[in-house]
Image (cartoon, rainbow, N blue to C red; front, side, top):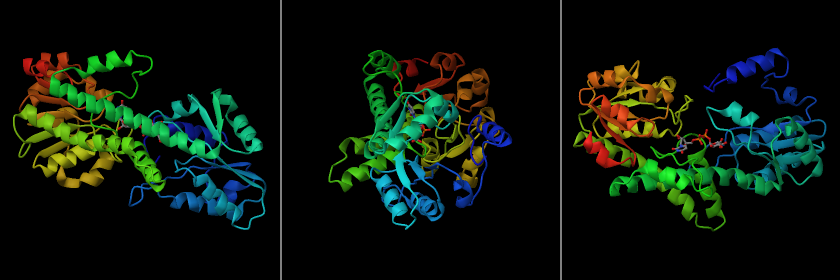
Length: 395
Ligand code: UGA
């Protein structure tokens, strides 16, 4: 597998062995006898923040070039509103007389839990104006038993961006509140529990930390802001979401410096977790990687460890950091251990052993996943994001 996704390799092996899945790089082979074709290509961020649609266009051209019978072309890639129109123009402008219909069917799965999210979706969104296209997609998804939202194509495209932008906004909101908690000596865990108990607010996506990363949230918020600007609408909320997110690493550095009692220059820092979140080896837009770069720029010497993303991180960071074989190894002679991803492994560490290994007993929990009492019991000094500072100094 080119990427780590729990269960995916096995699922693909099973489907291939049972004859339901085959791979080809020849579009005419893939389309032979097909009634539905999904475009599920990458839409990276272009030079000015817009979604780069090169691969979507290429797929549309290839489909138009070799489709023979009636075909439903479904866009699953995350694309700006009006991209389905573009796909339709490319396909129909190609001179192919086959009967094409175009629909949008955005995906809401998360890396690390992709299979579960796909099999048990909260909803299926079908964007199509053609009743036959809607019926085909309804039938296709019927076995999943999920509620189906049928909307027009532009609305479906908007739902995808709005969902990711809202999740990102929740995260930036709670990060700003966590930073405020730190300033006024309030406790973010209590605040999240207190506001999350309100059914109108809910508790999900209110985990403060290093900010959101990955190949979706940052890219999609930026792309939606571009769409807004293209329509002369100032994306005030979206810009604020991105700007809070960018600043979160600076807050993290400040937290580390507070604990060290000075700047990080010439300090040895152990960083545990490099992926953008737990359960993946993806380091794209990983806030942990941004933090490591920021620490190096400020003159710290960094030892890093990640249970699965180390291979990819090594390619980017090369010999600018030392890579450790475990968190304990990373801690050897370090002035602080910084937990930078929400990997479950880090919540179960042997803290007395860490206390014996660290040169100075500082633990900075940038994902608030540790139990401060357990860490302190081992004789370590603990700081989390917006977690009550009085307790930090009491330890
Ligand atoms: C995200 C969306 O959650 C999916 O619904 C969507 O389908 C996907 O993007 C996509 O567009 O393809 P994903 O990028 O896998 O999924 O990551 P999330 O689990 O949403 O996490 C994004 C980032 O936010 C991570 O860095 C995570 O650590 C961070 N996060 C998440 C927080 O800092 N706090 C939270 O409360 C939740």
